[in-house]
Length: 264
Image (cartoon, rainbow, N blue to C red):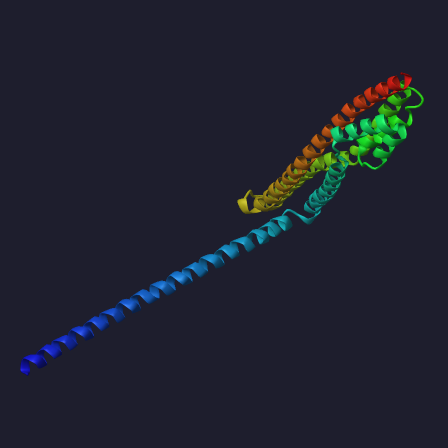
């Protein structure tokens, strides 16, 4: 009995010790998990604060640059983007499948005559269809008259494609110039403070130099953004003009073949 009692006591002590050890491990693990979760939450909050801080920093720098020049630079960006987006939409709507249109006009011209071909052009949008219509409208007179009408109306359509594009180039040149003007004014303010204080200290010139740098940076950013849109617009206009020239040549050839077939 004594040996059995001793065995039970030793087993109880061992079980109690094991339970206490497990509790200690769980207690030690739990704060680590909680700490990890808290650190993750803090990291996410720091990220949100950094995202929020970027907008606040941008607003702060814009205000520090001076409401006068920075406002004009911002106006250049807004107006330039408005004109660029309007031109891009217009040019995309003016783009047509020239090969399909030429084939449809040729088929209509051979099967139904000039009026059927003109009806195809009336139902198609874009400058190429308009040029085709003007050439077909003079087809009954002579090939020379049709060619002159195509060339003249092609110039009109080109003018419509290039409408207001010069304003975008103006804003591209104006934005950095305003930034450089802000730079000059900021340097003048810095030297005025040095002259008034009679001593050249970094704290006196830091504000003026910062204004100078901020206006220059914002002006260059606006110019870069508008330049990208401007180059896209010019490339799109060149593509449409090439299509117009090719279509004009095809139209004259179609009219020549049509008149030759009528004579036969």
